[in-house]
Length: 545
Image (cartoon, helix red, strand yellow):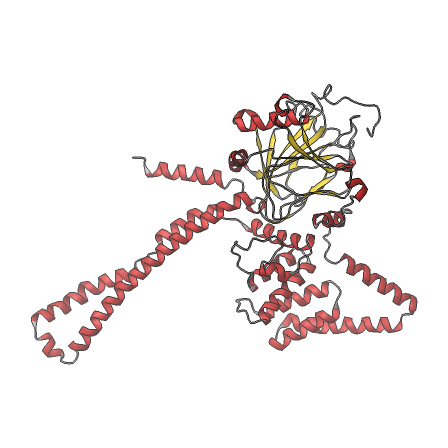
């Protein structure tokens, strides 16, 4: 028998390992474990409820029995106690049985549940996970132009009707608004506080009171320069709570600022009015944009929605599907691969049915225990760090750890004709809530001369990207410079060159992974490097060739 102390050590080590890398919101694959954790807790909670009900049933039975007995005994106390057995039983009840009842009532039936909850709590998401998931909802809201009502009801594009979805409550909407407020994101604070207010006005019961919501709402609207609306909400608040100190102060301040603003407007000339209107339009256009708004953000989001794709009919007519044997490769002469042109400049090719379902499940099985938050290399320090614009977890698989990985590597070499011995290991990635990777290059630019120096294999000449799941909505790979979009299809792979044959970087390959709106996106990729390709892809003297 293993001593109890040893078990404690083993359990502690197990829990420490499993919770060493949280960031649950960055991987849907790992979040599925939380559902089983919660299911186990519900089972434990039901056991606790049954134990409490059993205890109450015993107390109830005892009370009913004594109720009948005491009612009979008090009708003729002396006659009742004149019987020696009744007198003995009264002594026994008061001396012993009531003490046992007291012990039963005081018995804590929650020990098992509390113990299980304490253990499982080590696997729970933390505040960062909750905040990350909330910000992901707001990111999806902006990227796919969703209103708060659509998100609150869960009626998202691509949602499977068979999937159970509980609508967001007033408390849920209020929490999103508070998280936005803590980041001084008054645009989203306004949207979600208004949704919370709308649901309250609709009759939904809530522990959040209307006064608190109106307080947040009026201030966030004021911060966006809309004094009249802020004043209206403040007045509504004061009708509910006339003694609200901050609202009373805000009322006077808003009225003063509004009077001052109207006075200035009345005195200004035509030119000043036109300038003010222009400024208002600019503010309105920028409303909702994050502080770190990328210059290409609008184009990126358009492509994610399937808008702004720049493929003319003439160019489209030159795109084909074909069976390819890769220059009469022995493996593919009898069973050629299905090849489809996705884009012409840069040339992006999709290969269909590259991985079988069993191979995909094996790769996911190998990767899942090792998934860690994906990082980026800081361009200044070179240190690997997490970033808000890359929401996923990844793991690296080596060829020697399983025959399936080795087969995939060989398949990539056979189809592309490139040497993968100098390539990076197979990277497997699983995207989280609203998972994305904003526009980036795969290759090292001229201002990053040491990008892959430690590998000693040159720059990343090409990218091979395998889609290991279908994505019902969102999750496209978009090329922002050329206006291309490639949508995930399970088992297929896309391939493109990051460098021209001259070795110069192809800046048209700048791409991004769009936020996953609905579904669970799994991909794997192989970054192929320059070394070893000298006789497989010969150099040219033309920089753009």
